[in-house]
Length: 271
Image (cartoon, rainbow, N blue to C red; front, side):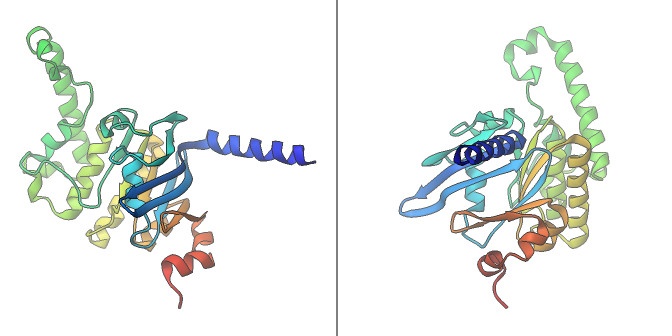
């Protein structure tokens, strides 16, 4: 009987791993004497929109930084599509199809909105000096394709009229839309969003959430979202993971999380 139960447990673990596009296993991150992430294990199902919530200091952003290569964990492992990415650089992880945004949108302020998009595509022929002399036609054709794609993307997210303006003149909400446009310029498999609703008016929040749903549905992109706005998380996410004191506290559907006493105490607070 014990062997049978162990076998079922192993099968269940194997099935769960096969469904997961991202796996975090026993990850710990120390900053001096402070343990920001502690023996954290979680996974994100491929094609899902999964939320990550928790009180301030729970380790959410630190975990995002570990997943995307900005921090190296002291212990533990991170896997993307069953390939270990622990310790890879942000550029290497991006090249595998993982895109990350930040709470404060990052852009090239002095460059135009259009130019911000044209910087994103990887493998641009013109990046190599040799090609500038010997593959001018290929460079020109690729640039024309990228420009056309960028313009179509700006039309889609309703920033086309601002294509020639420096990015620094965009509002906070428009900068969040620009980040969505940037992710649309490459073939992505997973996007980590850090506070997509922060500092954005409700109407713009709704527009951003609609684009996320569209990209998930039409392109099959997996989204992993850190967000403090509970209305956003509860309305857009299929599953929610809760962190507290650097580790996973709970996981479930929005209704399960909303009614979980441990979550209410640790994150939402007692009435």
